Image (cartoon, rainbow, N blue to C red; front, side):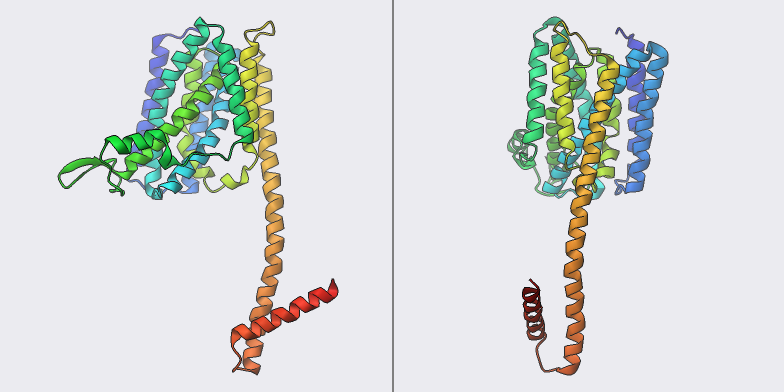
Length: 358
């Protein structure tokens, strides 16, 4: 797919305007609540879908379908980014009011780095056919790691890039307002917020390799790959604030993401065999079905475990209420007996009753 320079310019201008509006509305570094994050998530998703509709009218259904497939893969993989962002913010104790600023500048860096990766990857795939096998094998291996070694995460402060920054540049050990660089004792030095930003960018560099390769498995059109990445990433900040409190519910989502990565790898390898490229409708169907199954599976599993915990808590709660009522009665009957002794005697009586019933 050949795209004129003005189309690139128009999309980049639209992205720049949307980012400028976002920056202006969040210039006060306030804490992002769930309602605000949900509204912004809706705005970014609507923008991504609208661009797909524009593509449909401009380039046809197949091109639009390719874009939507790439957009869905990137959107799904970005959920895994949310897990890592939560880990980074927790490790560095980032104040909630500063998290949006870090993610904002992290997104800008991600757009630039991914643009470079996309052009390099597409050129390699177009020039050397064997790179399809290399990228495909990499995606399959990444899917395996995500499925069976998902819990193995390197602590953010041990990231090589973070350690390099701390080694070559003077870093203040604390946050200085919302500044990445501050003047302290007459010297300009980096703050802890700069270290957090580097950790976010370093993490996204790793994720970018996976996500770019996955979309390149669908198409080598740099315009489609970058726009799918861009519109999915633009909503990453709002997605984080929406899902930060719900991450524990998606306990099996990584299996779905692993399947998608492995599927992208197989699709990329198949494109250089007599099988050829798989149809876009099939690709979209696999993506939607895999995500739906993994999300529903996660919600059912966490609901079951939560019901079990509620039942257990309810039993212990009844004992606690009984203890409290017993304390009041015993205190009135015998105010000289210590509360701990009364409660211990009651616990012993209760255990004896339970043993008799067994």
